[in-house]
Length: 371
Ligand SMILES: [Zn+2]
Image (cartoon, rainbow, N blue to C red; front, side, top):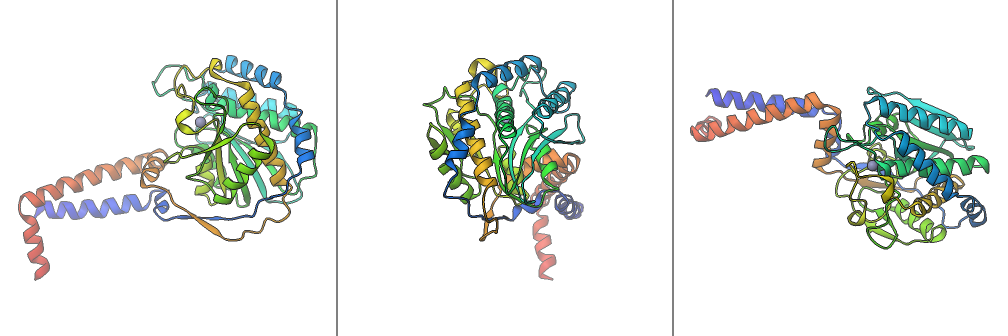
């Protein structure tokens, strides 16, 4: 009898604890608006910008930042100092920067190039780095200093060659992507009108296969994915291949989760991507600056063509499904204490259930129901 009461109490507590987890709503699909992206491009304008990509400047920027910031863990002095350095580099370009403070040391940064309308085109990357072995260095040059430098180069070129944009452009440098997209989840929670989001996380490794882009096709807005492929075919000199993450894998997932169309393009298909990430070997020697420059081409094309888009009325919705494992990851990182409590209570429920079954209590339970 005690085991049955224990089981009932455990189940009630488990339901109460899980129901209050922040991301439990992802058991149901998220509705993401579908937009019609341009099919005719402003090739003269965009190619004029692409000509200004400077590989020497990209190399020097990578060398300086990798040398000065060999660690960038999100809740550390080094992680915070790195964000301060990126903020001053952004201000040097003349672009206004918003600083988004979080519950940890490293802030997120939002660089803005305003257009005529409120609707926004966003390109993202992340500031933090991690080594999966505690106390070892986390240089994170590919993951994701390469993305940071990709965005910096594109912003510099856009600022030096101003255009009349319709949509507003934003470049997001997120803190704390590695511990579960915490920075982007936080920042994007206050947004309402993003029409397209492109993530740039790992843009510099090309040794795993003949150089190509990897376009992530699960966890993506379908029309945006097709549009990005057309941009690559028009403006880049390497091909694209489809790839899949199989789970939430970078900040574009946070954009989708908040109901914004998003896509993630990385250095290659996942199987051929940098094998040194999250170790002390994610260093400059594995970076191909020419490959980073291909990503700058894509970012310039995406930013300009999408910001010049005429109409931004959605023409339907796409249901994006998340997996239960995503909910576990997000809940464990965002509501840690409640998640641990739910796990303990679930263990109690299972233990009680075993006791009930062993004692034959389920027959008594059945009889009770019959009465
Ligand atoms: Zn990353």
